[in-house]
Image 1: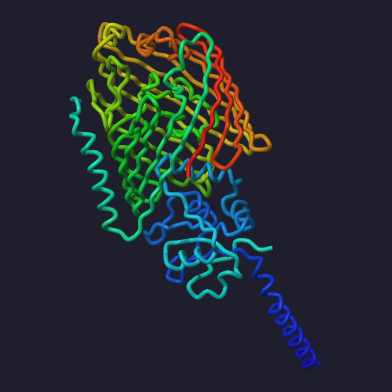
Image 2 (image 1 turned 60 degrees about the vertical axis):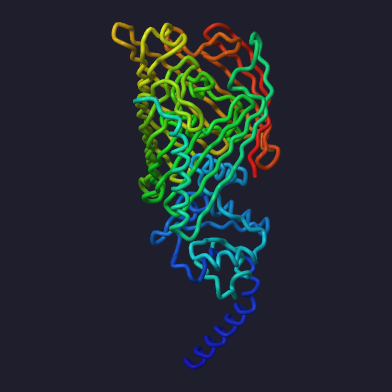
Length: 152
Length: 366
């Protein structure tokens, strides 16, 4: 009897793993992840640090100033970024960045419309922080994923 | 403080470039900033012979900055058909995140409006700035451009809030025959420049938010010389002490901006000292389709009795000093970084009343 339960559990686990393996590519396409270079020493960034960083304020790690890189490769990424990371409309976000430039000459985040160029820039700069679809970076050995920012 | 030699501006510029070069040489990465704010305006006012200095038909504000790890160099050059001024030129060092010590020419920290909008017309919802916040070359009565040292810091309080502190000390403008002249980093510097000390402490409900409420302070020793200045003022100096409070609060689609200043003017012995009050309250409401409606009320008390205030009224056919004003307007952000604004106002000045209408196109590039 005990052996039967054990066999059933094994079967159920195998079925679940098979389903997850099959579903993984589909799920991976629906996850926006926070990324840095594999050379980066950043272990994690909380929501407030992330918001400060992308609003143009100074965020440092081990004394190094972090550099935000905007992903504008598609409108959905931009929409999720505005809603989930900086929590403001596009016009308000743009005005906030302009305001910081006007007040202190603060540098605005660099934006990339091509995800390949964005990944290249992030991979080359240990202080760069950006975000991308999981499917675009999952198999890139130059990029390290810090955490999932959004999933469907 | 003695008069500055013409070499001073050059020294400032050269030391700024050296500062930037030093920073570049010491570090691997640098980041620069370059923005241009442009505005074009049409104006009509009843009973006025001409538009005043605050209403140029076109002006451009160029922002340039360089950040090199903890070093920063930053400037703002404003140009209109009548003038071109290096309004700000600052070299700074950021000790810890959001704590910076600057040297150079900066906007005094005791102004609620100008530290938020500076000369960038596009970022201002309305067209006009309150009379009490006007720049020196627009017959402004409070010194706005100081040359010296500026300290700025923002510290977290609790999990989300912050306290912001800024304080500046340096050379105040001089009162000359042409009005109030701050130290010019490019041109000549007539008159004697006294001491200016200004400060602000503010509470921010969100560290990264746009809302704040705070207290303002300023003390400026202004030395008078030349033209009608001495006879009008009947004093060789005017020491201003300014106490203020302000609020700039955004709640969803609403924004409220208000400030009130008490200004004490100390003159030479034997001459009666003066004081006056001036303030404003502006309410903005965002509407669908990127429209924003706004209204502002400006009020003052005892300004019409002040000899110091009278100094800035040059009787040239425009309105330089408003005792009160009511303004109403509509702004349309019709495209990214482009806006059209219409503003109607009723102004009561030292000598007349006027109705004004302004239309403006403003933009930011790139």
